[in-house]
Amino acid sequence: MANISIIGAGSWGMALAVLLHGNGHRLTVWSALPQEVEELSVSREQKDKLPGVRLPEDIRVTGELKEAVCGNEVLVLAVPSIYVRSTAKEMAPFVTKGQIVVCVAKGIEEESLKILTDVIGEELPEVIVTALSGPSHAEEVGRGLPTTCVVGAKNRAIAEFVQNLFMSPVFRVYTSPDMLGIELGGALKNVVALAAGIADGLGYGDNTKAALITRGIAEISRLGVALGGRWETFYGLSGIGDLIVTCASMHSRNRRAGILLGKGYSMEEAMKEVHMVVEGVYSAKAALALAKGCGVEMPIIQQVNCILFEGKSPSEAVKDLMLRDKKLEAGSVDWD
Image (cartoon, rainbow, N blue to C red; front, top):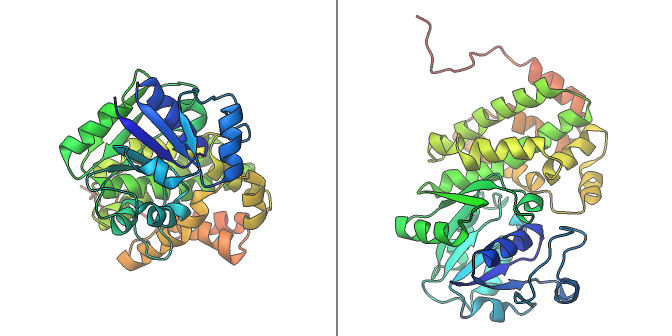
């Protein structure tokens, strides 16, 4: 049994709190929003974000970061990616050497182009940073529906420790040393999911979705390997696994935002309609900047950027994707 704090009381944080409580751990949930703390303390439920999933009564809910951080072995950082650095800064006075931070947010910091575990490492050099990712919508994890994820860490013993914390009959966890690949897969799939949603909003079919997923993972793995990730990671749970579910499920806020974009909504209108942070919007610029820096071609992500930030019509973006220069599917495969 471990003392664990969930830093961030959104839908994902709530789902993981319920999961970890079911594994026998002692849980504290922290929120920066006073009204959220009050609601969770009284109703034990995120009625707007995760209806029907209730926090057990013995899970503490607090708005005091010091209370959440001090004395807990493991801190699960579950805030949206755009708040990871600022939250880590606020945690800094309270963390102690050797505490384990499990980053479950997915994104790339737009200004620095850093993955989130690197951001946490900069702000909290005393802690041990790990990452958990995979096909895991909060709406299903909170209801106890089976899935599998992967935890990345620099040290095998730490990875196996975190694996044991989360492992359950409905939540199977694998381990990997490729933290970079795990994080890039989790961040970049959100941008491709926007594209998949745009295709849905335009009224395209299953063939289009399958093509976007297939070519999307090709783009993600090209960039990921160029940056130092392992290609096996991108064809695993945090790559193709997370990409499939995020492109296909209506639980995906990125897909839902993309559908609205395909129907003619602006980026701002789509984000407002979804009512939650759409991570792919924030990762899109960073992904394109990383690709340009590495000389990697990412046509899907480039067109998503054009739609989001340059006012390009989705139908025109699809046309430009389809009529690009002809290519071999696999450039490394030679003719006999």
